[in-house]
Amino acid sequence: MNREEALAIVKPHLKQERYDHTVRVMETAIQLAQTYGVDEEKAEIAAIFHDYAKYRPITEMKRWIESTYLPKDLLHYHHELWHGPVGALLVEREIGLHDKEVLEAIHYHTTGRAHMTPLDKVIFLADYIEPGRKFPGLEEVRKSSWEDLDYGCWMASKNTVSFLMSKSQPIYPETFHAYNALTNKIKA
Ligand code: DGI
Ligand code: FE
Ligand code: FE
Image (cartoon, rainbow, N blue to C red; front, top):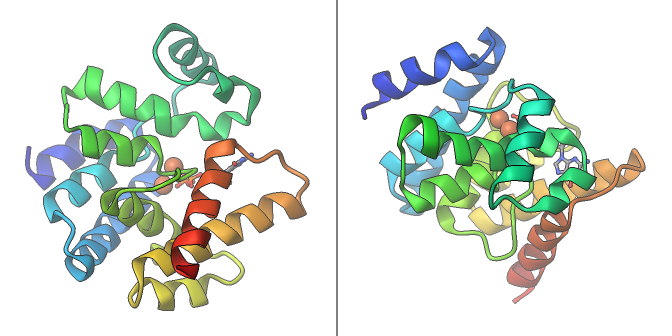
């Protein structure tokens, strides 16, 4: 599947603004992959499909979580977290994409996880720093992202955890696991 085919498949599943975000994540992910020696084709395809399930009805995502191998604890957290794991499942089932590394990068793109693969990190960070984003502290993350992949991910993860805590939001365990693992890695 080439870039044009993949984009044409994903487009009807997204609103225009989300499609535009997807294209920017793709461009950013390819640049990060080039910078850090990560497989560019995998980065491209994972980025194109990372938000595949973003607009699935909450009830449908809930059913997929209940009826498959997906972690049940997701049901106790915000439904915004569901589109990554459900997206990975549906990209495999509906698109027939079976690359485990690509599916895992899609699965964990919102929360991260402990010991993220280089591809996980490229997608996680590209989603956070793509040029259309506006978060407090983002310029600093953008700058670090081109100097040190772990440090960029650590800053993105730290900002997300701080933001969620400032809003008194529950934090999913994988989100903490990502932050803890990255903190230990950059201190080592
Ligand atoms: O799908 P996107 O909008 O491109 O971005 P995303 O997949 O990173 O989703 C972002 C949202 O997910 C953002 O509002 C922060 C939120 N989020 C990330 N980790 C957690 C979380 N929300 C909760 N409640 N808990 C988390 O651990
Ligand atoms: Fe997302
Ligand atoms: Fe996204």
